[in-house]
Image (cartoon, rainbow, N blue to C red; front, side, top):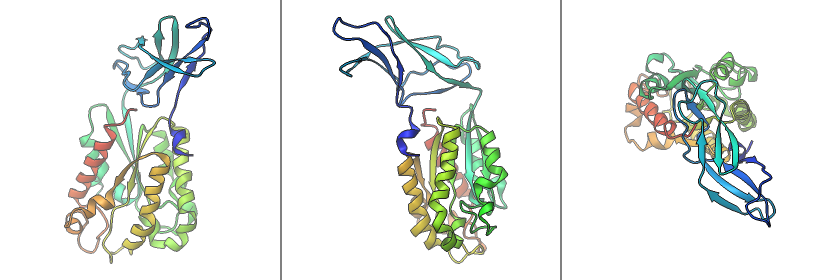
Amino acid sequence: MKKLTLLSVALFAVLSTGCNQNEEYDFYIDDSDAWHTFIEGDNFNSDGLGAYLKGAKSGKLKPVEFEVENGENLTADQTSVTIKYGEYSAEYPITVKKEYHIACVGDSLTAGHMWAHESYPTYLSGNVSEHYKVGNYGVNGISITGYGGSWKDPEKRYIKQDVYKNCINYEPDVFAIMLGTNDATEWSKAEPTFLSEYKILLDSFIEQFPRAKFIMMVSPPVVYPNQFDIPNEEIKNYVNPIQRELAEEYGFATLDLREEFEANPNYATEYLRPNNDNVHFTKAAAQYVAGRVWDIAKEFKL
């Protein structure tokens, strides 16, 4: 699924009335940069929404000032507002929820390993504003391909686990995804299917939640040697470029933790656990990552 398929480019309401005697016009709503999901009790936010008259023959667009009906104090059962310009009107579909959901998808860097109470999703829960909730869908040892990490079996890949189903049931509005570190430990086996399996996972999320927003998190560095035998060079040279490639292809927001960690000359001691762990986040790192995820997520038009 390519980048353009992530956007709802336009809605059409075809009307028979013409603006002049020579051409009939359609009423055209451009919602490619607009809000689609709202919190119960909010008023409709028309930022990014454009209304146009489109010539049925010429295809030319004329921007028009529009009004919104039934857009105040939105209710949970409401599925649309009415966009009007003179005698033209169109029903604009919306979703009204009690809260927005951020799903953190990943391995032990998300789950928190032995320090779940100091995971970045835990701190993210404390950062988000009133109407946001955070779900931690990280699993220790999990991988995209099933190779590396705790298992050596492609049937153990992330999309085959209960955590994937639980994430779907959470009905996310935002996905923050960081998977690939464990695949690097058996890269010779993971490489042939890593890209295709990543796309399968992403496409499955998009198919079920076409309006959701995504943050592709580029896996951070590790220090080698470490007790998990996770090789830093394989992450840097193979996993990270694919993560960046996917973010660009799908049009996702990118949080490049390798670049950001390495910008701190003391990251190995400040951000990675000591005592030969050298992989998992310290409290300071988890707080940093939580802050950066929220920096991005709070700017999304949902």
